[in-house]
Amino acid sequence: MKHVIIGNGPTGLVAAETLRRLQPDAEIALIGDESEPPYSRMAIPYFLQGNIPESGTHLRKTHDHYATQRIHLIEGKVAKVDAKAKQLEFASGERLPYDRLLIATGSRPVTPPIPGIDLPNVHTCWTIEDARAIAALAKPGARVLQLGAGFIGCIIMEALAVRGVELTVVEMGDRMVPRMMTPKAGGMIKAWVEKRGVAVHVSEAITAIKQKDGALSVTLSTGSELAADLVICAAGVRPNIEFLKGSGITMERGIRVDSQMQTNVTDIYAAGDVTEAVDFHTGKPELNAIQPNAVDQARVAAHNMAGGSAVSGGSLAINVLDTLGLISTSFGQWQGINKKEGGSGVELVDEANCRYLSLQFKDDVMIGATSIGWTDHVGALRGLVQTQAALGEWKERLLADPTCFMAAYLASAQKAA
Figure 1 (cartoon, rainbow, N blue to C red):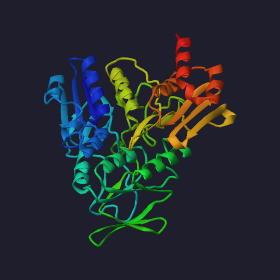
Figure 2 (cartoon, one colour):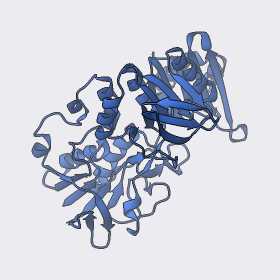
Figure 3 (cartoon, rainbow, N blue to C red):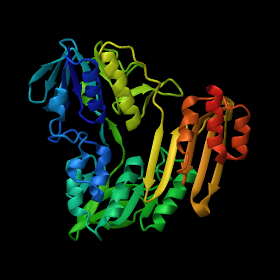
Figure 4 (cartoon, rainbow, N blue to C red):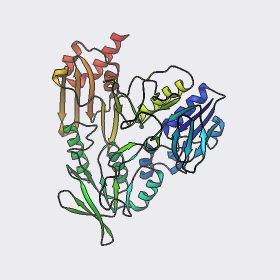
């Protein structure tokens, strides 16, 4: 059996290692299009902060790991999948046959159509090569403007702040982390970072970038201009699926997969950010670019590629963020649902101590939660959402006092036992 995996990030590597454990004699090829050992993009901010060397971003630390596991690393860019011939075609023209294929190509940064976005000293922060360029420019006192204050943007912002730059963040949404935080919570995070010296513009966009007086001049949608030595674009990501055109694989925003991570084409699977997988709550296909889900999907795909019958429980929103020392989380359907669908919720706000809780319910089941400033037992929020336990009288207790979520979780676990 010859397994080929396109994409050598955490998803692809976990799948490869799982396949090796399940099928000791199989051929396994892992393809990446960067001239780097497999590494974690999530570790790049720690490299920028100076907490780890470049080698600290590598997914496996021993030099002979892949040889020992008999995982064949291939550097190359896949240009086409020929599903009928069961072959890949590289940009170089070379072809590689497979028996079973896993597509784990992840995402790439979105580049907005802004005049000047391709100027020198304008960078995304997605690859190690990006990080090297940013590290060379983001010196103490440098004027840095970042476009985007989403999850990835806030992680990058943390690294830049540690480097001592003069930092401005521009976010098109009406709050920071708009796809992870409620309006109130996003506003509280904004106030927190502003108190720590970061200038934040929400409900604004960059309309142009020009070179001026040896630096960059950035024009905002309000008409104001800001000078910068470095501009970082963190405006979101989209799945890497363009090379699959003509393959016969069903795609919308991402690759459509079933609960076994199988595409509509026999022997072709997909996992991670590139997929539209079944959502935990709705059962509908959704993009959910979150690493814990990606790794779970990798294991499910690998088991089925090896002839098993593993099933994914569905993609669940799981977000944990440290923003300049402020811990925030959101799980599940954190934005809630409407009353007609049985929705209700409670919000606790303590701005003086920068603490916040929002719990969302469908009937007596907790379907989502958001927190700021809570670190003790915060995993119980995820547990309540993921177990879908009927809370009974505990729902009313939580509506009256959302801080008793740990007691509610223990009670639901005891009931289930």
